[in-house]
Length: 320
Ligand code: SER
Image (cartoon, rainbow, N blue to C red; front, side, top):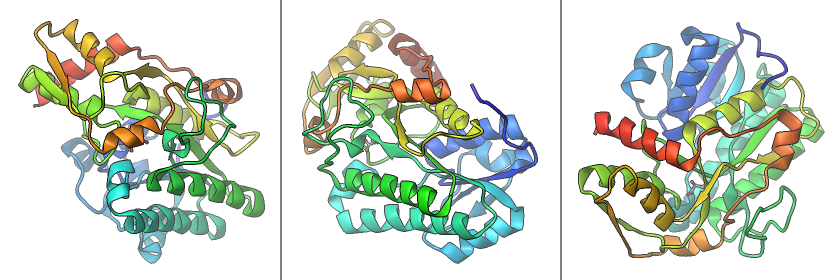
């Protein structure tokens, strides 16, 4: 785990707190640092737990002045920037996705360079890898030529983070998330979303039609592991390098996920109707070599496929 817990009085701002990752990050950080010390912010309201358990600010991440005001108001020391247009939506509207994904990052990096923020977290993705990248056990450093708009923006963002770290001493940390699976908030506009949708349909209809083909294997992770990775990376006192770390956990295809669901719901059936998202999935790795993260800051995932399926079905059973 961590070398040192972040100063318990330091205030943390999560931008994008109503999204899939932001929601759970806020709740976990509030448990660790206290409700009042963790400020949630988004352009839309969050779920009941987020809105009721601590401070919330409406915030447009493209408005640097507005972000600056919130940072001053709460004396924010750490920012988690969890706003992004994901792969599928980005392909439909490349310019808008590029503008939002990059301007949000520049706003925070510039505020960190000139202001009181001491640490920044910015998520990257397996989408930085492209069709020329080795697909199995994809290394930390390898051929990185993304073929999607989302991947291009994440790779550029990684390079800008490294630039601000090296040139201006900004402490910015980053992870290349795989597909993230959770039940509290749905993802939106991603290629890996099938691995969440499938659980809703398994409960509602006991059948699902996958938009990715039967054997499309992708790296995935249960949300708790992603949140633990994020928080322990931020708690590390110092990092030797400011790379965006590969983190791996699970690796499965729609057919393998369906098989795991059938262990809990024997009558569950799956069909396949690949669409434009297949091409995006085909350009990404199948599994990830995360040895740098393991060595540098002790990363270790905890939730295996069967456990993740059990938690998802149970969680959704009570909420949908
Ligand atoms: N989950 C993301 C997507 O599918 C990948 O980072 O776009």
